[in-house]
Structures are given as structure tokens and as C-alpha cells.
Image 1 (cartoon, rainbow, N blue to C red):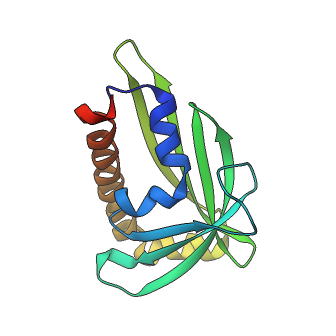
Image 2: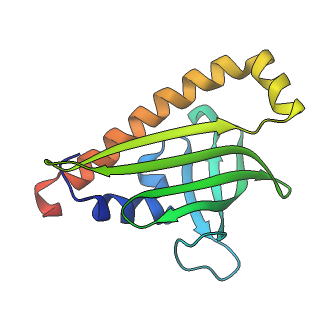
Length: 146
């Protein structure tokens, strides 16, 4: 992306922006008095699965928080992580390389999910990550972003 890493990170790490970029997340809000990104901070996301439903809330915990470099969070089931999302930002001569990734927890339940329906979900996540990154790129590269 043709933008400084700090500008991109500020958009990504403020989870209240997630609804602007993600095809599935409608909105997100900080929990427990948190007002911004910090390691261990919790937030919840309002999800519309596959853009059609069901609609539900998920609780997440920030697992990586290095301004201008990386932001990550775990989606929790109770207090156990089931999926981990991560953004890595690498400054370049012309802007910033942004990589988004996800990793399912290494548990028996997630292994079973991977076998039963995980490939469809994986394809959906990859498609949605591409959309998310394209939407972020459009915002940070817009002339008014300067």
C-alpha cells in the first residue's frame, strides 16, 4: 500500500473500524473500559457469517500490538482462543507491505472442524482477507488521506 505503516496500523488496530473493511464484521467495540489497542485488551465483534447470517457477537483478545508493525487478536470461545487473526506491516521504499493471516487453534475440536468444513471456511477467509486489504488500501491511498 502506498501509505506509511503507522497510518495503516492506526486503521487496523482501532477495531471500531473493522466494519468498514471486513465483509463479515458489522461493527466492533472495545470492552472492559479499553479505549484503544493494547496487548491483552478485549473487544467484541458483531459478525454476519458469510454476509448472510447467522448474526452473532464474538469476544476477542489482542495478542499482538506493536504500532506500525503488527496487530493480532484471538477470537475466543469462553476464554479459549479458537481462531487467531494477524496483520504484519513491513515498510518499503514506496509504502508498506501488509499481510493479513489467520490460524485456527490447534485443538481436537478445530482439527475436526478442519476436516468437516474447514476448507470452505478457509477459502472464504482468504477471499474476505483480500477484500479487507483492498478496502483498507482504498482508504489509505485516497487523495484526501494525505
